[in-house]
View 1: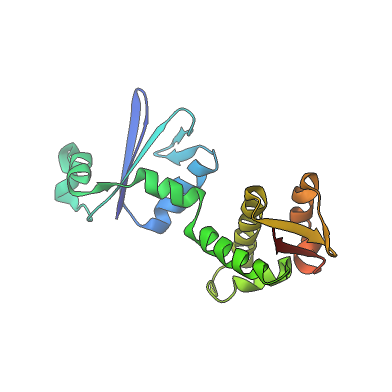
View 2 (view 1 turned 60 degrees about the vertical axis):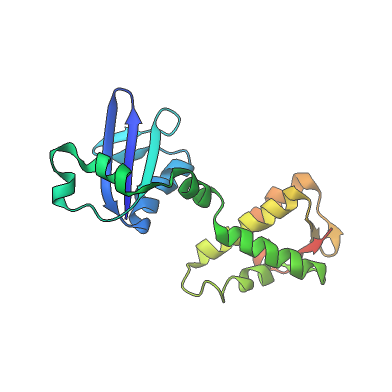
Amino acid sequence: MFHVELRQFPHQTRAFNLTREELDARIVRPWVAGEAVVLDDRKWPPERSRLTIYEGPVLAGDKLGLGRGWANATREGEDVTARVLAEAAHPPAVAELKRELVARAADGAISLAEIVELTGEPYPHARVSERLALCEQAVWELLHEGAVELTRDGAAVAREEWQAALLDWDGWTGGDLAVVWR
């Protein structure tokens, strides 16, 4: 279970016994996106607030009563703020896909459509939009790291054209864009 504290002097709020899915949906995704988190009818903008996340056992009513909840969360749990935010900003799935793409690109060009197909097997229940976002993020990072090159019909795509190419639906479905190892 996850326990959260949001602080913006002189205010604070806490939420207890959140599942990872609840934590990600209500707090982490908006926070990482730079959006205000809404908790207890108050907006907590990341640029002016402090977020702390603990992972620990479920805190039952007797451990939450009389304002003891946060003390018990910190005593019985582990501060995982940095890890959770890092995972949200750079999900492990992106790193795995990047490794796979570099390995495959070393054997020859791989089209963007083939990259999307690669995500079907390890993530069969993921929404298409999530799989596409994963692919886009992985390719974008590899391009900026200089690990791969983006090509269109065998010719290199200029750096200033990467964004437009990757945001074009036809690039992901048409097969004329590919990633090759540098």
